[in-house]
Length: 612
Image (cartoon, rainbow, N blue to C red; front, side, top):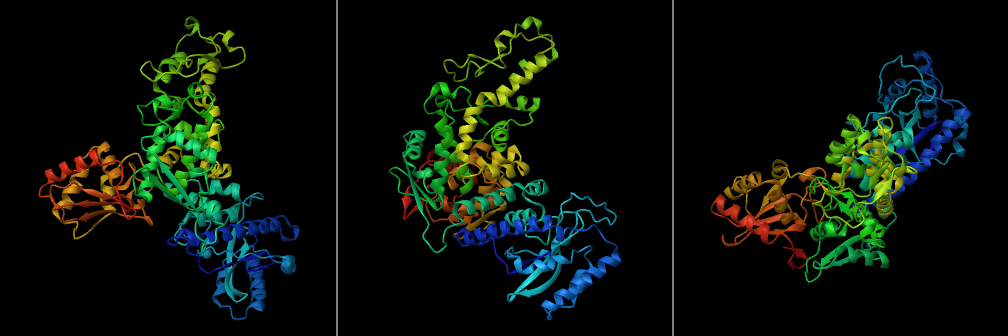
């Protein structure tokens, strides 16, 4: 590509991101990022160069004259350019020309294979013609012409004097968020881009953008023709998964090794391996962090969501911070490999993580969601009633749990909320300060070290800068779903993204009965059936359309087999397939499925590396 005056040239040769394998994309994405960085530096140089300063909007007649001059310059470089380009130029206003053309030979020029229709960048956020010029507003590019640069067809773009940001995604710009985000970064700068895309991306697109970024960081430098590195993990189902992970961290193997390639997981005394085995291991390993006796995570909503235990240091004073680092690494790897864990974190902890461990702008609603009893019996009561007779001081308990919960010796010790807080009595005059400090202790102060350790683990995969971007476009609930998958199993979505094989069709009785049974199942039974067939209890972000198999997205499949009707269904979890005998009644089908998921939901028997 080339840089001519204040114009930048982009190669229009299409680079396919969607549908290509990740190995093939790695070199493209890595080069694209390098080109983007060079391009952004050139843009910054252009904006700060006094000779290339962007003028204010000109009158229509003056704009046409300037565009005519630009057309003449371009015609000198390429006499074969179509006359249609003149109409493209006449639609632009206030395009900068002049002394900038003298810098052509000194500019490196950048070609970026973006694979999108750059004409869409002419769109304005505000189409009004009488918009007042803001000297600090962000500019963006407008298409000027098509020409030949070094034998390649290119679209020349020029800086527009009109403020605005292109509408994205739209029918012209690819919805691939990795591309769209990079385009917006070029146009408005990295910091501003986070605000621009906020609200424009669905959770699926945020995940896709993040996975592209992670792939570029951890695998983008690989030669696509070289063999990928292989990480091998072996786990004993009867052992302590956390103890095994401590050894991996110490020896820098397993999930602490080179995770840029494939991960091969195998359970001890089981021959099967594949993506379903890896999914089951993530569920298996992550569950250990929620065990009450480990005292690493606690739940205040009957196990629905988890929150770091403020008293975890009392249970394992030497290991607890290392265990949180392991947990962070495990969670980050799950996001990178698109493998859900068994842990659904509370919104309040997700807010802390997205904010890189810094206290966020909390409200009493956060306390109410995290601990309804604390809000009702302490926060709300103190704020609405006299406190002189309560004999309260600026202190709070280290770890407040009900008598029925697992308790650790020393967890009821008092912690001062401010200097000499044990000597400062709470009065009606200072009770609001007391409640504020108590809430901040519960939300942040009591788990600060645990959160920092967790972040040190997850930052080895998802950088602090990437979390800044995520925090701008991702809700805490969305982040929790990114880690654990969707909280519910939608039977209609499941059926909609399914297929039949082996001779079954959607109109066969057995298939109809199967979906009727799934719809009649309660949520735990649906999750158990999904785990039996796929190795995971939760659908991924995007629902069943994003179900993962050996080679990426895999439809849930009902396969016909000629086994006896006395046989139980079996599953090929790596290809998300259930083998269903030709049962003769709906009741029989239901009874066989319930028995299968209750007896065979855990463990694999391998045959030629295929789990059954």
